[in-house]
Length: 202
Image (tube, rainbow, N blue to C red; front, top):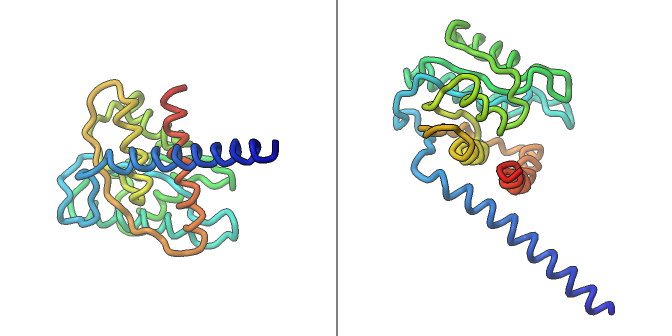
């Protein structure tokens, strides 16, 4: 009986690992050729969609490197003339009580980007909501996502599967942080990719 229980547990673990790995492979391979890390290689887009995150980490209240690196990326793209407008999509009231979109707007304006070039969507509480609202609320079908590579991959996959019409979506990869906090985010991303398929199904 114990042996049978052990093999059932082992089978469950194997199936779960294969499920997680499979979801990650599908999403990672889907976006090949449409992700950029070099500003010079990016085609021109009227709208760059900056995906939101909090300026401070929730675990230890330190500067969030994901936030800083996304701001750096958006600044480079705008000043290089690769994007004309920046639509910031995130939470206007995240778990720590901070408006991600307002914090990002302030940071961009502090880098010399004019307010007239910045749009805010504070209802992008999750990535799937951000890309869905680009389609249903803003009716934007061609845009450049700005976030870390792993986040861009997931957002691009979602955008291509929930838009009501064909979309032309690419991503610009902000630098990945190397802090201990960032490692936990990367681990969480594996499971977030499984949830992508759950969300698309239900």
